[in-house]
Each structure stands twice: as structure tokens, then as C-alpha cells.
Length: 228
Image (cartoon, rainbow, N blue to C red; front, side, top):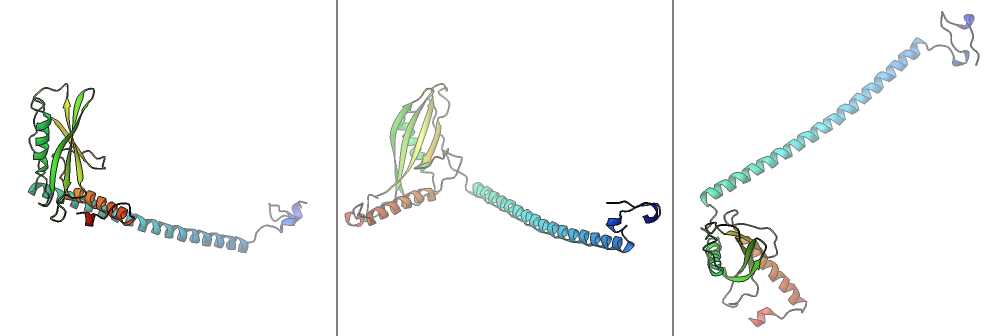
């Protein structure tokens, strides 16, 4: 490429002959116009995206507000329910007063405070004693069922397992430690901490009945309606 000096320069500036000379004012104006249009397009696209994000943020805020309101209402309902119908408990015996039979009677007394319809019946039995390093665990089972005139002995029952912990190092006047779990559940509950729900028992009974019906329909069990 040849660079022409003096006679081929405009003013004090030189330019390359093969490049066609410096840009004219019209070319400069066109370049500025293109840049302005491009910037406007970018600004419009950015504004649209920001609007979308704002709408999304508003939606998220609304969802959070609704969730907080629902939690507040649920807490208020629970508070009113507990004020009007407090969770029931009994006075449990101490370590020094405890025997396996007294523990069984205490559990009987405690479950009698549960709000269940009158057609439910239950009985409590002592299962076993576990000798652990620092304590004895007395295990009891409370079985619930709904007998009928046609079937006085219900074919299924719902079990609630109680554990009375006697700590070997505690003084005789220390109260016993009591906990319980529902059949096939791992959640450990304690008396006076949560309200008992009759629905827990119904769910266990219904699940067992459904399973027996499935087995009977596949000829894996006899027809219970003919047996009772």
C-alpha cells in the first residue's frame, strides 16, 4: 500500500489512497444515527427485561406476604384453640413411686383424657423392660379398636407404644420420663406437648382395612364378612 504525501493530503492530515480518503460529514452523521438507534434498541430491551423482573418480584412479594398471613392466621387459631381447650395431661408419679403396674395404670389414666368418640375401646398391656446403661425402659402398648355388634372383636387395631424411662441416677422424687409413638411412625411425642388427634387412629385403622380388602380380593385371605 502506497502512502501519498503532500499533494494527496487534505490539510495537514494524510490518508491512504486505497482507503478512499477520510469519511465525509454525511458518513459521520450516518454512523452517529446508527449508534443512536442501536442504543435506543438496547435501552428498550433493557427496560422490557426490568419490567419483567419487577413484575416477577412483585409476584414473589405477594406470595411471601400470603404465606406469612396464612402462618399468622394458623398460629392465632391454634392459640385460641389452646386457650379454650387446653392440652390435657396428668400428674405423673415419681421414680420412687414407680412400678410396672403403676406405670400401666398411669398410661390408662392419661389416654382417657384424649378426645375420642365413645365407640373407641382400648386396653393397655405391659410389653417388656429394657435394661440400658443408665436407665430402664418400660415398654407398654395401648391398642385401640372399634368393635361393632356384628363384629365384637375388631379385625384390626391401632397401636400406640409408650416408653417410661427410669433413670438410674435420678433421685426418688424426680418425675418419670414418658414418651409415646404411634404404630409405624418414628415421631416421638410427649404428654402435654401436643394435642392428640383421633384422626391418627382412624388413619391406621383405614390403612389396615384397605390392605386386608386388597389381600382378600386376591384370595390371599378368607372372607372376613363370612367369618364374623
